[in-house]
Image 1 (cartoon, chains in turn yellow, cyan):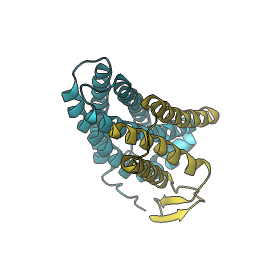
Image 2: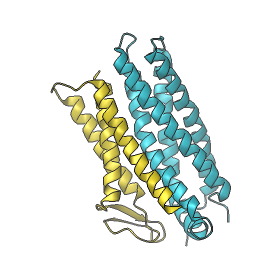
Image 3: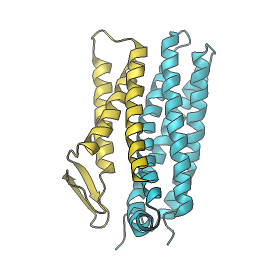
Amino acid sequence: MRELRAALWGVSAFSLGYLLPGTLRLPTLAYDPVARTLRFTAGVSGVAMRYYGDLLWACAAGLCAAALVWTSRRPTRPVAVLTGAALSLVALDVAFYLSRLLAGV
Amino acid sequence: MTVLFERSARALLLVHAVLGFTAVFAVTHHAVSALLAARGRPVQRQLQCFGWMAPASIVAQALFGLALYPVYRVRVRFADLERTAPAVVQLFDLKEHLSALALALVIAASVAGRALQADAPVAEARSVAALSWCGAALVWAAALIGLYVTARHPVGAP
């Protein structure tokens, strides 16, 4: 089923696209709610927030991956393997953020 | 100094909460339907129905949450919680991340669930069920954390 494979690749890319910009401090859109300014920068500090930018990176990665698989004519991998990979990447993200919570408490 | 949407923060929070409950119920129903489909039950109508309700409610809820975020950041997090309850700040950060991942999982499960045929291979039905259950678990976790943080200090309150 093409929809399922595109969705699974989309989830995998979203998970990576969400985790990597924040952890590697890649440049992203940062919004400063006090100054009301939007900047594309890697150095986000103080009250400025990079959540919007990281979410945009993740959505772009997920949509691109899903679109590529949707249009691809290459032979596909078994659904069980794709599902395992997608959910493992989600679990990796959850474990990383949970570890940061536990380290901070 | 006024933060974006500060004056309508309470109304936005109420809508965010109502949409949150809608999302929790819709994704839970979708997860149950997907599980029944994986066990061979004819639940294509439910998957079609909750396949648009779940993503619509979670996307709408996310948009209201994103609108509220600057007010939370300035008036709740930096003005209060950073000083009085840093662990709650960490907990809210976790909620943000779980919500983002839930968004992707719920949309993926809904798209795949709507396309699932009655005679689809078991592996595909199981895959949809796994996506849907993981999405529902993250939505439940985010909702409970959101309720806890709101009980500590809601946006729009001094």
